[in-house]
Length: 70
Image (cartoon, rainbow, N blue to C red):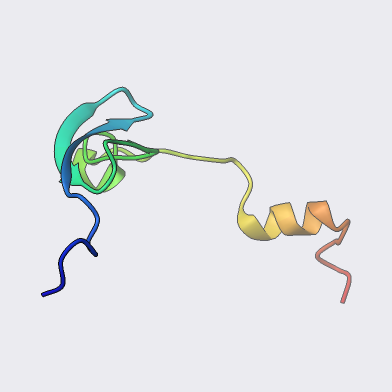
């Protein structure tokens, strides 16, 4: 194995937008995530709506398309 080609593997602090924090190991000292196991619907069992409109509706609204237009 070659020396000095791999990044340093350090202890990092992971913080979520929900306020949860935990420590792990990674190549960066701090990591910010949008969703974690404390707030993810799979682990909590609660549904969390991120946005009211779907992707298709947002696209149609952005480009001024209607559903009847072909």
